[in-house]
Image (cartoon, rainbow, N blue to C red; front, side, top):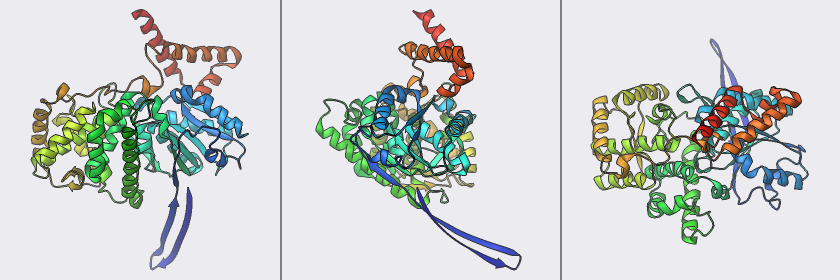
Length: 461
């Protein structure tokens, strides 16, 4: 991130008036196989520092840690990796502060960029740590999930959750650079592909009809092939995926960059984010983000249809696409009480106005402010009747957070969990528990959860 600043200070009859402007610039690079030693682009950012601190989650490190190490070894740059667990339930101040501790131990220099590798959750939390550390520490993002590549990488917002409140604590902090490598999708579980698919429906439904058309045409193939990155994927699907991803990111950037700090609160990309912040963390375990916003988007489309803002064919087409993608369009906890609670909360966030984005027509957007609670309740009842006719009654596939969100794999993951505990035990024998805890980014509560999982899995065998 480069920044140019200009400001003026003038006297007033009662004091002073300050007026300042800051120019923010940052770059995105599309690149395949970012950790291939033949690609020097990433290494160039760290050659002047002669070292690199990388923050990633355990799952990503298990898959790509060796490649990362070989890459930096090849370029003669010492690499230090801080691994942490991540998931909605670990998207907390505790996790953020553990990353700050790692930066302190590393001795990060003010303008030296931290390398953040992982999905949208890790880039959010580590980005917030960088925003907070010395009030502003540089960082470079390498997102590895669909949500990370398409959505989280586009915004400069970074945050953690506070209790049941989604992204309640955060900042606006642009990275120095973002590398977009879609080959990571080769190893991404299908549940996470589906999770990110929702973000593309979001932006295309309200802002880019050609992208919606491609999503509609290739829906199932995009999800089953990891957006055309899996071995043997048809070239047609890969080309469609590349067009979808590039156009989706471009449209998001064009909408976001004039309003980086959300001074304007009428935001097209907030489609699906009116009631979902209250709904997402309400179940235990929580809904995946893509499923939570899908419920919100589908309901908002029904509300638009009821108010005469969206045609019946477009309404049906939107709900059908969510269902085909295996995304959730309704939930038992999405009732009038939650609708009221979510409305009250978002009115505070949006300065007293609802500002609910709705598609009207498909591919464009308007904002609702004067809709009554009675209208919203009536639309909710209509929505629940509509989804009864969809496959699974509107329920989604893999809708709740699980091992791929938290870094601990249940059942199949006993070996991984045992490996974590084994390292803890070895480190305790050699130097005490605090060493292991810091290296792994794991606290005592998580250690107990891992042990409980192993005990439960053993009992089932």
